[in-house]
Amino acid sequence: VQLQASGGGLVQPGGSLRLPCAASTSIFSINDMGWYRQAPGKQRELVADITRGGSINYADSVKGRFTISRDNAKNTVYLQMNSLKPEDTAVYYCTTGIRLDSGTYYAVYWGQGTQVTVSS
Image (cartoon, rainbow, N blue to C red):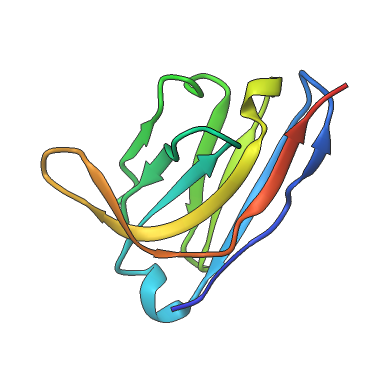
């Protein structure tokens, strides 16, 4: 299983970034996908997840600002981040897993993280 996230960097408050994550062909078409983040000294947080059927959940902290999407033809999931705030600073991780009927998403495989820093 391979998950390759990219697109992180330094951005000013109010700016935007898009994080793509390329997944192995063998997993992308059958699995749900999710983005987590972890800031220094804080617990890891599920930011957004998307099922293979396109159902989406967001953390309250990013609703209205972040958009998760997937391109099945490219085996890629994206996290579009707009109106970024300093508190969005974290390492962002792409994952593949499963969303249960209860709505809870569980990551099974993790990619390497990509650092996002929001600062003026």
